[in-house]
Length: 217
Image (cartoon, rainbow, N blue to C red; front, side, top):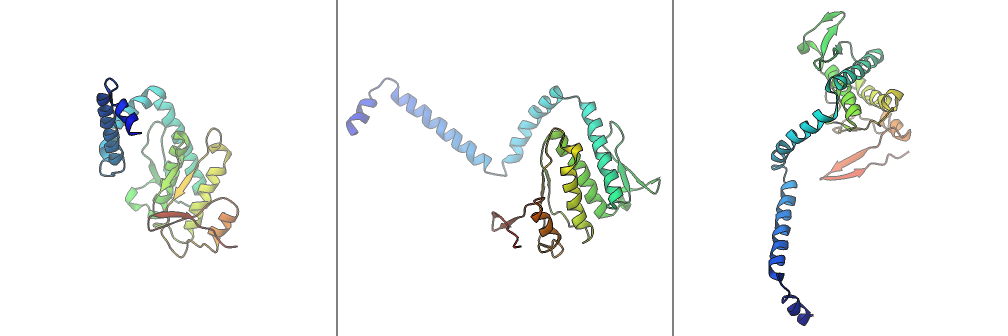
């Protein structure tokens, strides 16, 4: 083996090629470390945003997309009103992405809207955006602003939208909800029922590890 290595080193440009390969390996190692360093991530995101913006602007009809998102959002809001999840209606006008808040026929101030209703508005707009962009709906600390009655309703609405024909035309809606441990996230009650129907899956995070939680029947 030693003799073979000595013969290889006699090849033309061997040392130059070896040096180049080592430099590339070191370069990729640094890149890998940067991708694993969350402090570096904002810089990388800033570099990619103009590129993604250019791609989006050239590949879609912006006005039509806004119209479609507004229509689906307003449909979701109507469904939430029927279910009793919200009392204040937050509707988007065509072409605008800022909702108009109406309570009992009158426009109202956003500061007067309850925190639980704001949570449902978030679910509505993220569902519409998630559907049209084919991305999962990710919401952190779900339930922090919901009382025990509205908490299961929040999940049932999301499941209803996921299974609705309107939102299964071209894509499949996916939801990822992060829930802090709390008594009314009842693993022996409504949560278990939804899991047994195959509507949700529960994963537990402990010490940085994620593991699927099996609910005992």
